[in-house]
Length: 140
Image (tube, rainbow, N blue to C red):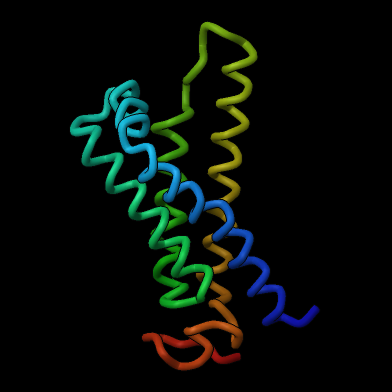
C-alpha cells in the first residue's frame, strides 16, 4: 500500500474508536455522568459532555484529516489522561478486573503512541489537510 493509503486507513481505524465512543457517551449522558461521578471527578456532568463532544468531534476531524497534527497531539494527551483516570489502580479487589483495567491502560498508552506517530506523519494527501485546507497542510 502507498503511504497515503496507509495514513488514510490509520485515520479510519482511529475514528472507529473515537466517533462511536463519543456518540455513545452523548446518547447515554446520564450513564456517562454516573461513570465519571463513580471515579470521583468533580463536575461529572460537565466532564461527561466535554468528553463525549471531544471524542466525537476529534474523531471526526481525524477521519477527514483536518488539522490532523494538532488533533492527534490532543488525542494523545487525552488517551494518557483518560487511561490513568479511568484505569490506573481500578479493580484492585478482583484480580480479573484489575487485569482488565491494566490492559485497558496499556491500550490507551499504545493508542497515544499511535497518535504521536500520526501527528509526526500528518494526514497524507488523501485528506482535508492534504488538499491544502488546513494550517500546516501536508501534501507529501
